[in-house]
Length: 303
Ligand code: PPE
Image 1 (cartoon, protein in one colour):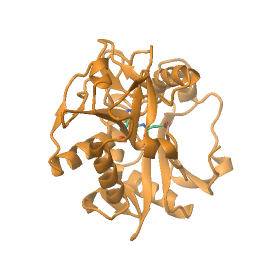
Image 2 (cartoon, helix red, strand yellow):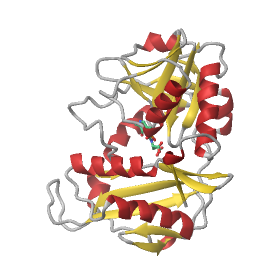
Image 3 (cartoon, helix red, strand yellow):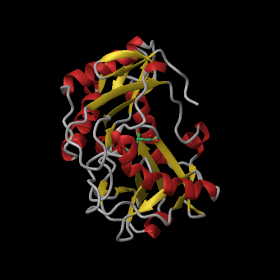
Image 4 (spheres, rainbow, N blue to C red):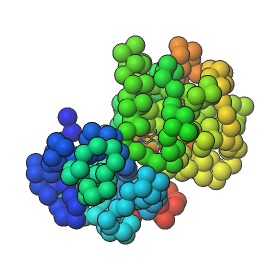
């Protein structure tokens, strides 16, 4: 259970947590068309700051745009609302979940007059794949479910309905005793985790699948920038499942997952079976930046 906070920003105003409810005929609840974001705010030495807020809000609007949803607020208003939600709840570090959904009114797939609604919640959320996962690495299994084909989804969008696919993959591997799933694309190449992008290190080169069938992760972009700055060569390329098996290192990235080392895939040990030096270096750099102890102040919005 997540811990309850005081209020949730809903359609322009802060609403008490328990009153932030919707009608059961809410369109998005039935058909899955809603767009959302996951953002983190970190407590640092100089107070709290939201990591890459503008980029997350930009992606929220891009998701809405490609889905033909008009958000009745401006990006600046949403950025301010995110900050207001954090401060009004007295949170220092938290996860923030903006959700744009289609309200009730008409039913059926094609609706034109239902209101577009926006909610922003924030709550304290610790490590996504366990504290141990972050330090020791996790055990991953490739799911039998393929990630959506590019022509049956909009890959730049973070649409709620897509997460049925993610949940099927995740439930399958959790039931089999693994920590997290990995999905291949419909051509059989490595795509991503249910809620994470994936990276490997092979012969010192950092590799990640191209954006053809994965979400354009903001942590992914962050890690690629940091790797370049650390003079670690980076390549976007299609990877086969056995590219993963013979990798020296592997890790997941995501707002929730942060930088989580992978120590095993499909029962094959990855490298030494411990988080490798490149993963550790990138992980350390990432955590010092989000806590305001590294560079890139432009990625932090103080609250
Ligand atoms: N791929 C998918 C499918 C995905 O959902 C996420 C984020 C990423 C990659 C990484 O993107 P980014 O956060 O911009 O680096 N997944 C969000 C939801 C997780 C959840 O369980 O809910 C997240 O990490 O917030």
